Amino acid sequence: MLLVAENPTTTVQNARAGEPAAWDALFKRYQLPLYSYVFELVRHEQETLDIVQETFINAVRHLAGLRTDEKFGSWLFGIAHQKCVQYWRKQSRREVFAQIDPEDTAEREYPSSESDPSELLVRKEQEEGFLELLAELEPPHRSVLLLHFLEDFSLEQIAEITSANPGTVKSRMHYAKRALRKLLEEKSA
Amino acid sequence: MKSPREILLHKHRAATPRLDALRHAALRPLNNKADTKERREPRRLLPLLWRELIQPCRGVWTGLAAAWVVIICFQFTAQESDSDTFRTVQTTPEVIMAAREQRRLLSEMIAETEVKNIREPSAMPISRPRSERRITCKMA
Image (cartoon, rainbow over all chains, first blue to last red):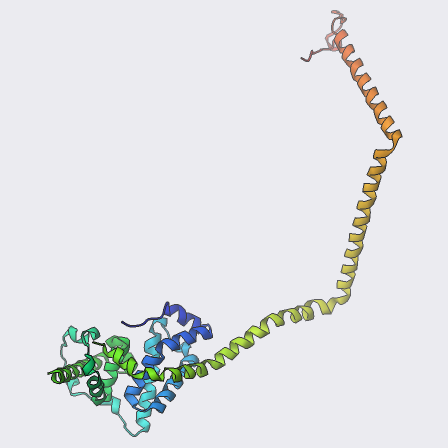
């Protein structure tokens, strides 16, 4: 079950007014999921901490750019995602997030059951395997799956965070979940 | 069985103390701003009032204060003299006697008037013009 702060919209409103306590509550709510997301993408602890800190600082500076208070979470993850992309570019891994997925070339209908995160439950003995499999996914697929698992973002929200179109996000999600489920089933067998 | 979210958060929970430190560092400028604002605001108002309102017209404010002091003193003294006069009037025996005499005269007058009124209706002549006839009413 996802942990949701009490009255998140009120907290964001108070943060707009410059209340330090409101900012503290918001960052405390998102710090661990944000850290998990960034770490699973960049795979470097110090870089992850730097990116998270820069995300917080940017959020405080540019809160006026957030149009809807309810979208604070996706907005915060969007800032972090852009920092991860900048990191990848610095590491000379250009265009990692701009790779064209073979699945994107054809328009397909994906089963709606594929998009329910609560369906995927991992046994204790499979936990390590799950994390290894996640790390093996390509960054675009990994980021979509992480956003879906960590914060239950919708396809539209993930598309905004990753600056991709919803069709691309849907295909990545479908591909990533299918691959993960298949490998988990193979391991359990 | 755990959800993927639980697995991921559990994996990275050891980073929480560092994240707390990081969060406090990011919010330090905001906290400093809030402290400075709180310290300034109560002090700002009083010196501002003194500077803008009182200081430019010190003479006027002094004169007004002096006038009020005089008025209040006068009020106190006037109240005291009134109460003294009242006590004096009450205690003089001459005044008491004069009041009693007045009451006696008044009661005599009232008694005479009542007797007059009772007699007059029977002695009234029939031949007298109407305008001269007194209409008496016996009050029950």
